[in-house]
Image 1: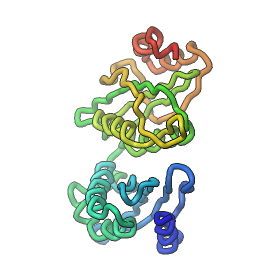
Image 2: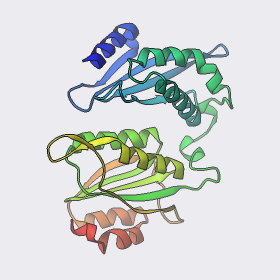
Image 3: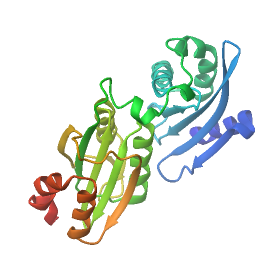
Image 4: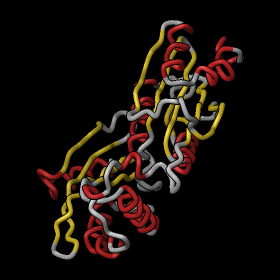
Length: 265
């Protein structure tokens, strides 16, 4: 109830710059605030998204920051600074305080290596890694009870971390293929294992305990570099194999899917 009252107050304060993204009856409350920060007389538009779980404010909100005028690293640095400050406010309503702090500390956080995102070129290529290496991981999930919510969480994490790939369903088989910077894949795995993304047999929200990392390796020549993340449903092993074949990953399919126990689940 306290979180709902806080969100209602924020909606009144920010008015047209406030957008409610999800209703509180499901996984919590998600909303976005549009704000403008000044960087040496230049106006920088930010979109700050907050997800308040049912445990908030005892636990920290999930925060993401994006801007067409900043680099991905700058947005990540802003988020990390904001999360450190949020940790000092644990146990009390904090969103408005975080937005004020962001305004007051924006220059200090982005002054380091400020570059307009427009001058970076293709960010998906810029941020693969320092040497341009793209990493790939194939994950197996045992089940999804709250499927729609789980899919939304995966799509949000991959978007926030600039990861591309596939979420693939074939019968009871669930696979996640990720491509991107190795650190971002590691960060994804942390989110996957520490967030309450599913429900248990009694309907209570729970963390993912049944995930397996089938492989994690560098993308090789002849393997397709994906440019987006997509959810796909397959009706047969042949269709799933064809998807891997198109991506240049037939060997991956044979090694970790076709001849493994998970293909029979």
